[in-house]
Image (cartoon, helix red, strand yellow):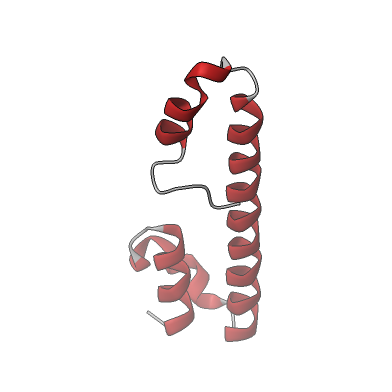
Length: 78
């Protein structure tokens, strides 16, 4: 397996052999795919965090601190 396929596999959390069909693409194409996938994953993370923040508006004020600790166990990222 090439380094670019291995990097993409790590990003996706799959075994490199699962991406064997991608071996036929050149390094530039694989790098472009890896970049696109990375950006999509970052956008998904941001959208998810925004949705959690929005959901907090529906939690009664007295329970918000507890809800924040449950929704953001590592602290808020945004």
